[in-house]
Structures are given as C-alpha cells and as structure tokens.
Length: 211
Image 1 (cartoon, rainbow, N blue to C red):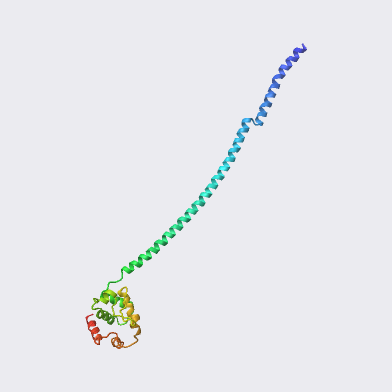
Image 2 (cartoon, rainbow, N blue to C red; image 1 turned 180 degrees about the vertical axis):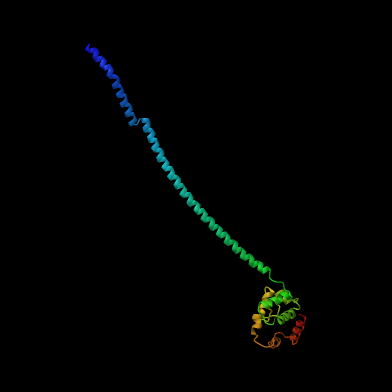
C-alpha cells in the first residue's frame, strides 16, 4: 500500500520536474548563443569591418581621383593660357605683316596726306618738289630707290635708298626741313642750294600752279 502511494506521488511529480527542466533548457537557450548564432554574429562583425575598410578605400580612391582631376584641370588651364598667348603673338605678327602690306600706294593724294602726317611745313611746296624731282613719279630713282626728293648722302654723293616711299617723306624733314627757321620757304630752298638747277624754284612754282 505504501509503495503504491509512493509510485503515485512520483508519477504526479514527474511532469512538474520535466516541465521545470524543459523551462530551464528553453530559458538558457534564449540567453546563451548557439554555434549558429555565434557564427552569424562573427560574420556580421566581419561584414561591418569589411564595410568600414571598403568605405575607407572608396574615400582614399576619391581623394586620389580628386587630386588627379585637379592636376588635369591645372594642366588644361596652363595649356589654354599657352595657346591663347601663342594666338595673341601670331595675331601681332599678322597685324605687322598686314600693315606692311597695306602701305599706301604712291599717288598725289596719298603723298600729300603723308607730308601733312609728318608735320612738314609748306606741304604743297614739298609736294611740288617731289613731283619735279621724280618727273611725276616716273624716274628710276623714284621707282628703284623709293627716293622722292633726290636726297643724297653728302659723304658719298649717292642717292639714299628707302624701303618705301613713305620713308623718304620722313627723311625730307630729318635731312632738309629741320634746318628751316623762318622766312620765305622757296627762297630758303634756293639759299641752301637744294638743287643745282638755277631755275629750280621757277620750276617748282610752275608745278604749284597745276595743283
């Protein structure tokens, strides 16, 4: 009878013990990580570390790329400046060549303008002198040496040679008229012996009447 009671008590307590043990196992399982959880945790840590490394690599790559781009931009600006300077220099050369090629043709109006531009006194008298000296611009000294006024080198006695007839106009002032001060200009030309022909002044006056 006593054994029957003990067996009955054991049967009644057994579910409670099992249940408590199951609860303990379940509760501990919730608190303690399993191998799979540990592996997942470690992998997550690796992913975070790798992610940081990747971000740093990307950042470093961006910095290098920005530095390279800045260098490329600087080189491009320097190249543009050099090209601009070269174009400007070429333009200056072209302008000089163009100006040389656009020197005025030898005509009476152009010659008169050039005489006035050089601030030469008595421009009509000087124009008449040029016409007389060159035979209306047909003489060999005019055509070959671009000398409009029969100007000669006092040391050699040879005619001056100019690159363009406009140079001889300037030379007229620097070699002749700069000596003039006051008085009748035609008489002054005669006094300094501008020409060997004694009728030179009369010939100049005749041309003046046609202008």
